Image (cartoon, rainbow, N blue to C red; front, side, top):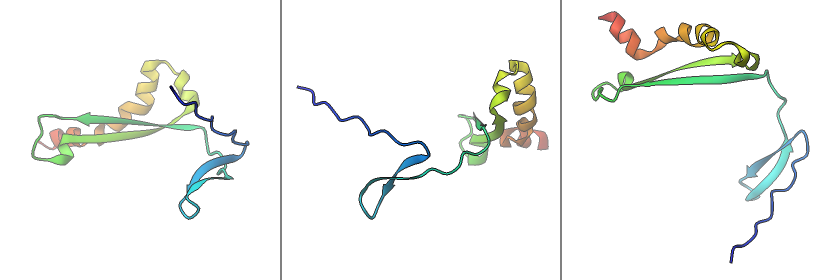
Length: 98
């Protein structure tokens, strides 16, 4: 017979739940103010053939994207946020040095 679990209590606006290690329970605290409406776009390039150099095995690029840019056409979004970051990838930098 399946037990029914109590749903999580309603969290009041402006508050958030956090774990208090001293009290050993979840407590409500004032939530930090909302920041700018931005997203983080992270792209990982992984080379499974690279076994010797960890920096060349995987590298990441991160772009800070305003939420309204999600409405851009795909090509425009890529040109604005991804293309400028490509030269930062370790694999690209290593190939350009050769």
